[in-house]
Image (tube, rainbow, N blue to C red; front, side, top):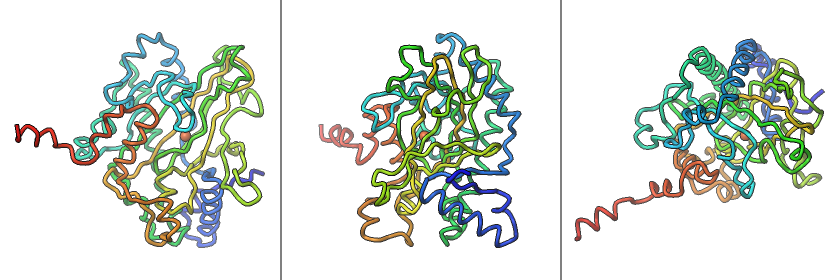
Length: 360
Ligand SMILES: [Fe+2]
């Protein structure tokens, strides 16, 4: 039995208050202590996901020159292919993750935000001749988005908040679905401090992880190559464990994962915990892993500050001053090395040059 709670979406949807209460308790413990829950009865089509991963592996095994054509440095890699060694975790001190990615937005985006944040609200772009893959990509993204929206409503109710407290601020937001491939280590890299993903917390509202797939050195699908590789999360620090505990995230068969991001931690004044997590690489060379992650965001014009019921002096000190979700996201993209520092010049008054011209 896993110590991380499993939430059954049928309990959430049930008209039986006892089943609703079960789900609420699982969400309070999961999101409160671990920042993560497993989800049963999520409706994600596993055959579609397997097909998607097979094509992803084929696309990512193409020559780098071809993949470069799908890369979008002009939109800070927020769409299309992200080459390895592009993004780094904020606390990693320059150690980039050992992965390559693809980004696409499966939901309609607010056109007004496109004017203010053209990179973050960019149109999707796709490899030529991969229409079936694109369709699977968008359908999977939309399905896990719907799961996430159900969870956002349930986890608001679990804290005695109105159901729409978190969900209402997500319409038209820059939700993005990321396809990833963690890269094979060679014999000299195995057992070093190279990680597939350095420890970090996600900067969005809620992340959905519909389950990854390992591939052996010959390219065949396989089970986890050793007991230690994969996702680890850091639990909330306690008196007994002041640095938290590292817990291996291994969803029960058929379950997917939902994870709290920084925005949900801020809105709840820390009641829900943005999970620090790390992806450990296998102990043998040549293995790869594909994964899909869907990031639900707050709309860029939403105020990012703890909601009224959570406001105490300590919470205000910890999470103030308020900022907008859009400017928060912009700052984060600079911090993780995807957006240039000059992007921050958007913040504050920008028209001294106009004044200078008028005075000339
Ligand atoms: Fe993450």
